Image (tube, rainbow, N blue to C red):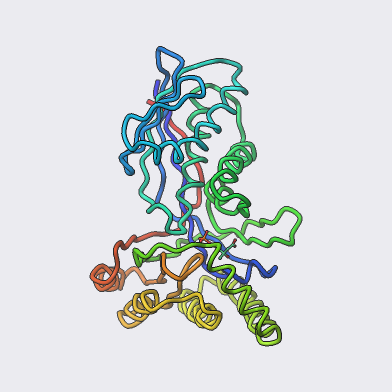
Length: 328
Ligand code: PMV
């Protein structure tokens, strides 16, 4: 038997950076997935293969032997190996596994590919081993893997990959996360500038600005908090035109705190010019991705224009299911 799982990536619809200052962000799972397949081996080794990254290697006990990709592959596979060991511990056996991972989500672009990988790996492995596991446990095991990669992750990426849908996230809340139920799709285009960005550096840049202009920053944050309330009401009303306008205002705030870039602004203005309801950067900014809210009728035109100016364009809508497993 081969067990399969898929888990979705994410975009931040509203509130990146302001969330660091205890505002609430709105995060959406997108219908772009990491797929993981797991099957048993005859020996006790654990073999990993990443199809999209072209990396492969095998663990014999704790020792790693590269097949392709050398040491770079080891740093990618080590957190995942840890996850598998946790699950084998729960199973109580010493099994060998063949694991194949394939991602539709661009890596290191702020779209949650690493969390979707660990969530799909956890679910597929548990399914193969017959471990009775609920979403909550999948989420917490995946968080461990995310902690190795991102040091102190907020936990929002693994949560959205596990549960899907729309989530409100606030660092100050006890459980940090509240699901927002919607019964419709939010049509999005994701445009990747192809410029790598570093979340930590972007967060520090904002911290410096906030320290230098505490009173000004306080009011920007206050504006965001009002915007957030409007966004929640607008999501409930299914008003995409208004939602787009609120995204534009959010982009203005992000630009005012210095996390946008020329390349992001270019993609955003192309999207608006071609008829998107609204557009903004998503995630840390400085590079990485932008998102545009686009009516289905205008999708092709906006996509065509963005395609010419970005390194990658993805058409995405809301994933409402989170992680899913099956077998063949
Ligand atoms: O780069 P991403 O998509 O992981 O998002 C970072 C979001 C920030 O608000 C900038 C940082 C954070 O930890 O919330």
